[in-house]
Image (cartoon, rainbow, N blue to C red):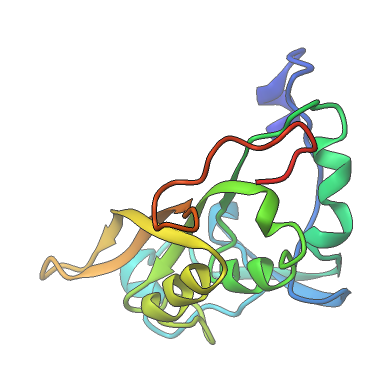
Length: 180
């Protein structure tokens, strides 16, 4: 579907890829609505939010590399890449980040999904993901609500984080060598 949306725009590269904290194999839980598919099983409360679309219709075995192992192929044609890394893996974002430790210094900004009330089993709480990012040189720029429960409580949000320079300010643009 993504290839069809891309059309003939060759500035976009589409790849079918799962990422994680270490290389290996995993089971992808494919939901009736593909945007709910995840390497994590759905939590029991997910049907409260998506009653007709969250059912798992099958599982697929997938090969899982790390972003560290494939990052260079995605930026190979960019002379001075300024990378904005958006991760939306339905509860697996922190695992993807853990597999990107070596390349994170080359990333200017991150967008990750954080959970306040997990829709998937084993999802870390929002503060754990943000703290991990802060420990790896990023500062929280903003939280953008994605889903609220019927009482208005936040369930999920996108967290936007930017690289922090040594004095606590945003980092300068990457050098000619491509580093931040």
